[in-house]
Amino acid sequence: MSNSLPSALFANIDRYAYAYARGKDAFADMFLDTFAYVQSANVTVSETIARDLYVATRTKAELIAVAADKPLKEQSDKSRNSQVSKLHNAYLLGELAREHNAAISDAMDAAARKTARGYTKLIKCATAVKSLFVNPVDPASVTLEEMIWAIDNALIEAPETAATAVRKQHAAWLKLVEGKGEEPSPFAGDFARLRAAYPADWMNSVAENLDAIARFFEAEDAEKEALAKAAKAAALAAEAAKKAK
Image 1 (cartoon, rainbow, N blue to C red):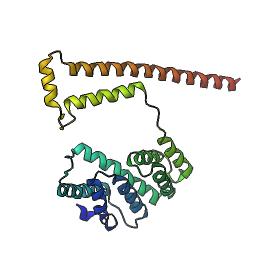
Image 2: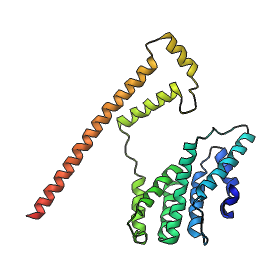
Image 3: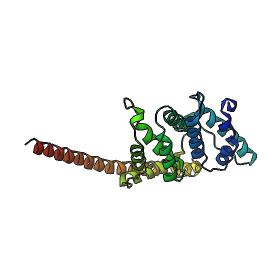
Image 4: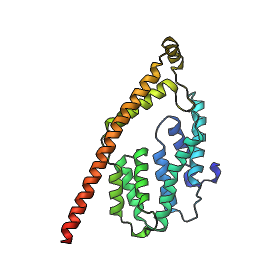
Protein backbone atom coordinates (compact mmCIF):
# COMPACT_ATOMS: atom_id res chain seq x y z
CA MET A 1 0.00 0.00 0.00
CA SER A 2 2.94 2.32 0.65
CA ASN A 3 3.68 2.56 -3.10
CA SER A 4 0.51 4.65 -3.51
CA LEU A 5 1.98 7.37 -1.32
CA PRO A 6 3.67 10.48 -2.70
CA SER A 7 7.45 10.16 -2.57
CA ALA A 8 7.77 13.10 -0.16
CA LEU A 9 5.91 11.11 2.52
CA PHE A 10 7.06 7.63 1.48
CA ALA A 11 10.65 8.71 2.15
CA ASN A 12 9.77 9.38 5.79
CA ILE A 13 8.19 6.01 6.61
CA ASP A 14 11.39 4.52 8.04
CA ARG A 15 11.78 7.51 10.39
CA TYR A 16 8.16 7.31 11.50
CA ALA A 17 8.31 3.54 11.88
CA TYR A 18 11.49 3.46 13.98
CA ALA A 19 9.97 6.03 16.35
CA TYR A 20 6.68 4.13 16.45
CA ALA A 21 8.37 0.77 17.15
CA ARG A 22 10.32 2.24 20.06
CA GLY A 23 7.24 3.71 21.67
CA LYS A 24 8.09 7.29 20.74
CA ASP A 25 5.48 9.67 19.44
CA ALA A 26 5.89 9.63 15.67
CA PHE A 27 2.32 10.71 15.03
CA ALA A 28 2.87 14.46 15.41
CA ASP A 29 5.56 14.40 12.71
CA MET A 30 3.28 12.31 10.46
CA PHE A 31 0.43 14.75 10.99
CA LEU A 32 2.40 17.93 10.37
CA ASP A 33 4.28 16.47 7.40
CA THR A 34 1.00 15.29 5.84
CA PHE A 35 -0.57 18.70 6.35
CA ALA A 36 2.44 20.45 4.83
CA TYR A 37 2.48 18.11 1.84
CA VAL A 38 -1.24 18.46 1.08
CA GLN A 39 -1.20 22.23 1.62
CA SER A 40 1.65 22.74 -0.82
CA ALA A 41 0.82 20.02 -3.37
CA ASN A 42 0.34 21.11 -6.97
CA VAL A 43 -1.39 17.83 -7.86
CA THR A 44 -4.61 16.21 -6.68
CA VAL A 45 -4.01 14.43 -3.37
CA SER A 46 -5.84 11.17 -2.68
CA GLU A 47 -8.36 11.20 0.17
CA THR A 48 -6.83 7.90 1.33
CA ILE A 49 -3.46 9.47 2.06
CA ALA A 50 -3.94 9.29 5.85
CA ARG A 51 -4.85 5.58 5.77
CA ASP A 52 -2.08 4.76 3.29
CA LEU A 53 0.55 6.52 5.39
CA TYR A 54 -0.62 5.11 8.71
CA VAL A 55 -0.88 1.51 7.47
CA ALA A 56 2.52 1.67 5.79
CA THR A 57 4.12 3.09 8.94
CA ARG A 58 2.41 0.62 11.27
CA THR A 59 3.41 -2.33 9.03
CA LYS A 60 7.07 -1.25 8.99
CA ALA A 61 7.01 -0.55 12.74
CA GLU A 62 5.73 -4.07 13.42
CA LEU A 63 8.64 -5.56 11.47
CA ILE A 64 11.16 -3.39 13.33
CA ALA A 65 9.64 -4.27 16.70
CA VAL A 66 9.66 -8.01 15.95
CA ALA A 67 13.30 -7.82 14.85
CA ALA A 68 14.12 -6.19 18.17
CA ASP A 69 12.21 -8.96 19.99
CA LYS A 70 9.76 -6.38 21.32
CA PRO A 71 6.64 -6.97 19.21
CA LEU A 72 3.88 -4.36 19.24
CA LYS A 73 0.53 -5.26 20.73
CA GLU A 74 -1.99 -6.48 18.20
CA GLN A 75 -4.06 -3.56 16.95
CA SER A 76 -7.84 -3.76 16.67
CA ASP A 77 -9.75 -2.39 13.70
CA LYS A 78 -11.28 0.20 16.02
CA SER A 79 -7.89 1.45 17.16
CA ARG A 80 -6.52 1.57 13.61
CA ASN A 81 -9.55 3.44 12.30
CA SER A 82 -9.32 5.91 15.18
CA GLN A 83 -5.69 6.69 14.36
CA VAL A 84 -6.48 7.05 10.65
CA SER A 85 -9.38 9.37 11.46
CA LYS A 86 -7.10 11.62 13.53
CA LEU A 87 -4.47 11.73 10.79
CA HIS A 88 -7.16 12.43 8.19
CA ASN A 89 -7.62 15.86 9.81
CA ALA A 90 -4.21 16.77 8.38
CA TYR A 91 -5.51 16.05 4.87
CA LEU A 92 -8.72 18.04 5.43
CA LEU A 93 -6.90 21.07 6.84
CA GLY A 94 -4.28 20.86 4.12
CA GLU A 95 -6.97 20.94 1.45
CA LEU A 96 -8.65 23.92 3.13
CA ALA A 97 -5.33 25.76 3.38
CA ARG A 98 -4.46 25.12 -0.27
CA GLU A 99 -7.87 25.89 -1.74
CA HIS A 100 -9.35 28.53 0.54
CA ASN A 101 -7.31 29.89 3.46
CA ALA A 102 -3.50 29.94 3.58
CA ALA A 103 -3.59 31.29 7.16
CA ILE A 104 -4.30 27.75 8.35
CA SER A 105 -0.60 27.05 7.78
CA ASP A 106 0.33 29.75 10.30
CA ALA A 107 -2.28 28.40 12.70
CA MET A 108 -0.82 24.89 12.52
CA ASP A 109 2.68 26.28 13.05
CA ALA A 110 1.34 27.96 16.19
CA ALA A 111 -0.34 24.75 17.30
CA ALA A 112 2.92 22.82 16.88
CA ARG A 113 4.77 25.37 19.03
CA LYS A 114 2.10 25.63 21.72
CA THR A 115 1.82 21.85 22.09
CA ALA A 116 5.56 21.10 21.77
CA ARG A 117 4.41 18.69 19.04
CA GLY A 118 2.54 16.53 21.54
CA TYR A 119 0.10 14.54 19.45
CA THR A 120 -2.96 14.45 21.69
CA LYS A 121 -2.93 18.21 22.17
CA LEU A 122 -2.08 18.79 18.52
CA ILE A 123 -5.19 16.84 17.49
CA LYS A 124 -7.29 18.95 19.87
CA CYS A 125 -5.96 22.07 18.17
CA ALA A 126 -6.53 20.70 14.68
CA THR A 127 -10.09 19.71 15.55
CA ALA A 128 -10.75 23.16 16.99
CA VAL A 129 -9.44 24.87 13.85
CA LYS A 130 -11.42 22.53 11.59
CA SER A 131 -14.62 23.32 13.50
CA LEU A 132 -14.36 26.95 12.38
CA PHE A 133 -14.83 25.87 8.78
CA VAL A 134 -18.11 24.01 9.15
CA ASN A 135 -20.66 24.98 6.49
CA PRO A 136 -22.10 27.46 5.68
CA VAL A 137 -19.06 29.49 6.76
CA ASP A 138 -17.04 30.99 3.91
CA PRO A 139 -13.60 29.33 4.42
CA ALA A 140 -11.79 32.44 3.24
CA SER A 141 -13.48 34.58 5.90
CA VAL A 142 -11.97 32.76 8.90
CA THR A 143 -9.10 34.84 10.29
CA LEU A 144 -5.82 33.71 11.79
CA GLU A 145 -6.82 35.45 15.02
CA GLU A 146 -9.95 33.30 15.21
CA MET A 147 -7.90 30.16 14.63
CA ILE A 148 -5.40 31.09 17.34
CA TRP A 149 -8.29 31.79 19.70
CA ALA A 150 -9.73 28.33 18.95
CA ILE A 151 -6.33 26.72 19.53
CA ASP A 152 -5.81 28.50 22.86
CA ASN A 153 -9.28 27.47 24.04
CA ALA A 154 -8.68 23.86 23.02
CA LEU A 155 -5.57 23.80 25.20
CA ILE A 156 -7.34 25.03 28.33
CA GLU A 157 -7.53 22.09 30.70
CA ALA A 158 -10.47 22.15 33.07
CA PRO A 159 -9.64 21.09 36.64
CA GLU A 160 -10.45 17.45 37.33
CA THR A 161 -13.63 16.90 39.30
CA ALA A 162 -14.21 14.27 41.99
CA ALA A 163 -16.61 12.53 39.62
CA THR A 164 -13.95 12.25 36.91
CA ALA A 165 -11.29 11.04 39.36
CA VAL A 166 -13.53 8.33 40.80
CA ARG A 167 -14.70 7.29 37.34
CA LYS A 168 -11.06 6.80 36.35
CA GLN A 169 -10.51 4.63 39.41
CA HIS A 170 -13.61 2.62 38.50
CA ALA A 171 -12.29 2.02 34.99
CA ALA A 172 -8.83 1.15 36.31
CA TRP A 173 -10.31 -1.37 38.77
CA LEU A 174 -12.35 -3.07 36.04
CA LYS A 175 -9.25 -3.28 33.84
CA LEU A 176 -7.24 -4.73 36.73
CA VAL A 177 -9.81 -7.42 37.48
CA GLU A 178 -11.26 -8.19 34.06
CA GLY A 179 -8.69 -6.93 31.55
CA LYS A 180 -9.64 -4.71 28.63
CA GLY A 181 -11.01 -5.73 25.26
CA GLU A 182 -9.22 -8.84 24.06
CA GLU A 183 -6.40 -8.37 26.57
CA PRO A 184 -7.01 -10.36 29.78
CA SER A 185 -5.97 -9.17 33.20
CA PRO A 186 -2.45 -10.32 34.12
CA PHE A 187 -3.89 -11.10 37.56
CA ALA A 188 -6.86 -13.17 36.40
CA GLY A 189 -5.62 -16.23 38.29
CA ASP A 190 -5.16 -14.27 41.52
CA PHE A 191 -8.66 -12.82 41.36
CA ALA A 192 -10.10 -16.24 40.54
CA ARG A 193 -8.60 -17.60 43.77
CA LEU A 194 -9.99 -14.64 45.70
CA ARG A 195 -13.44 -15.20 44.23
CA ALA A 196 -13.29 -18.89 45.15
CA ALA A 197 -12.17 -18.11 48.71
CA TYR A 198 -14.77 -15.36 49.27
CA PRO A 199 -18.01 -16.09 47.37
CA ALA A 200 -19.35 -12.65 48.35
CA ASP A 201 -17.42 -11.38 45.31
CA TRP A 202 -15.43 -8.52 46.72
CA MET A 203 -14.18 -7.48 43.27
CA ASN A 204 -17.70 -6.75 42.09
CA SER A 205 -18.52 -4.95 45.34
CA VAL A 206 -15.58 -2.61 44.87
CA ALA A 207 -16.67 -1.89 41.28
CA GLU A 208 -20.28 -1.24 42.32
CA ASN A 209 -19.23 1.09 45.15
CA LEU A 210 -16.89 3.10 42.92
CA ASP A 211 -19.64 3.39 40.31
CA ALA A 212 -22.16 4.55 42.92
CA ILE A 213 -19.73 7.18 44.27
CA ALA A 214 -19.01 8.44 40.75
CA ARG A 215 -22.74 8.68 39.96
CA PHE A 216 -23.31 10.67 43.17
CA PHE A 217 -20.67 13.23 42.21
CA GLU A 218 -21.88 13.31 38.60
CA ALA A 219 -25.41 14.10 39.78
CA GLU A 220 -24.04 16.94 41.93
CA ASP A 221 -22.06 18.31 38.97
CA ALA A 222 -25.13 18.14 36.72
CA GLU A 223 -27.19 20.04 39.29
CA LYS A 224 -24.52 22.73 39.63
CA GLU A 225 -24.34 23.09 35.84
CA ALA A 226 -28.12 23.40 35.58
CA LEU A 227 -28.19 26.09 38.27
CA ALA A 228 -25.37 27.98 36.56
CA LYS A 229 -27.19 27.88 33.22
CA ALA A 230 -30.42 29.08 34.86
CA ALA A 231 -28.58 31.94 36.55
CA LYS A 232 -26.95 32.95 33.27
CA ALA A 233 -30.27 32.86 31.45
CA ALA A 234 -31.87 34.98 34.15
CA ALA A 235 -29.04 37.51 33.96
CA LEU A 236 -29.36 37.74 30.18
CA ALA A 237 -33.13 38.18 30.45
CA ALA A 238 -32.70 40.92 33.04
CA GLU A 239 -30.17 42.70 30.84
CA ALA A 240 -32.51 42.48 27.85
CA ALA A 241 -35.39 43.84 29.89
CA LYS A 242 -33.23 46.69 31.10
CA LYS A 243 -32.26 47.64 27.54
CA ALA A 244 -35.89 47.50 26.44
CA LYS A 245 -36.91 50.19 28.90
